[in-house]
Image (tube, rainbow, N blue to C red):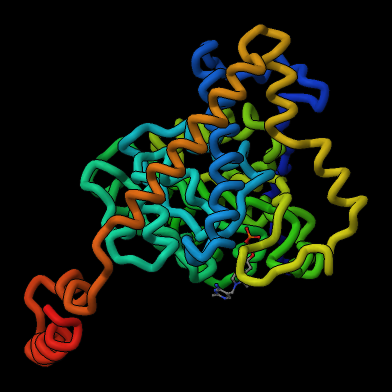
Amino acid sequence: MDKASYEVRTNKVELLSILSLDGTVNKELMPNLSDDQLRELMRRMVFTRTWDQRAISLQRQGRLGFYAPVSGQEASMVGSEFALNKEDFVCPGYRDMPQIVWHGLPMYQAFLYSKGHQHGGEVPEDVNVLMPQIIIGAQIVQSAGVAMGLKKRGKKNVVITYTGDGGSSQGDFYEGMNFAGAFKLPVIFVVQNNGYAISTPSSKQTAAETIAQKGLAAGIKSVQVDGMDVLAMYKAVQDAAERGRNGEGATLIEAITYRFGPHSMSGDDPTKYRTKDEESEWALKDPIVRFRKYLETKNLWSEDDEKNTIEDAKQTVADQIKKAESTAKMTIPDLIDSMFETTPPHLEEQKKAYLEKEGN
Ligand SMILES: Cc1ncc(C[n+]2csc(CCOP(=O)(O)OP(=O)(O)O)c2C)c(N)n1
């Protein structure tokens, strides 16, 4: 052959959307969910939004530490977790508190984590979650590792992990996907593309037309999903989980979504980099408003349901923050004890010094 020729394998990235803005659904794509499950999806989204509003207030009162608001992303978060089994693993980033709490982490521990208390990170034995990664992209590598462990043990479980559009620019993102692609691992990478990495818009972050197509290069099934559509998110993850369980490997889901609030409560001001017009446009896609319209036409959701859910969320947050605040304060000896099975002698010495200092 005088001329080398290469055939580049290509795949189309398709956008999955099921629920329209006026609340009608595409019947062909509609996932098989009972009325109770549909109501539960709504309950969890409304609950999550109220919890988010309360968490923002608590943070402003100095009763929480780091907090990244989630309002706008409820469909992406709640819908994706809802498609998993209890035995599946969730490897979150810092914004993904709803997924790990809905997966079983007690809420008061999420609050303790926010306050920097070590007990916040002591995950109960029967809850398959890792604590949120603050290092952008690190969870992508970890989730590939957890998936490898599951595969080696012959388990039928999958791992789901989340990062943002900014996270998809990190080296770890490509490493984790490459590993998952090469070993056909049962992992679902969800990129919640909310348009910004703090203040940097996605367009300045990457020259790729979609983030989903980044998975194609790693030999991974990749889709774009309307991340403001809870039914589409549920279906995309359900399909991806089925593929993972059947040994068909990893999936990358790019969820197109929006965070209505600031990046975090630590000094970000979105009015400096977003326009009112842009915000109003996204408000029309509010995942809760859309889904409510659909449920109301089926008589599955009422004003009372909404009111009761909001009350329940407020009460739960109040109880759980009280529990977090009444947890014994963290001490340095406790921290040292939690790190080693057998504490090294030089740290035993330090422990003694701190025990004296802390008056124990
Ligand atoms: C490795 C690393 N670099 C930088 C940061 C600082 N940082 C925190 S959040 C963030 C932006 C992340 O944006 P994105 O991944 O789009 O997630 P979003 O919060 O928008 O969901 C950056 C750069 C970090 N935490 N880790």
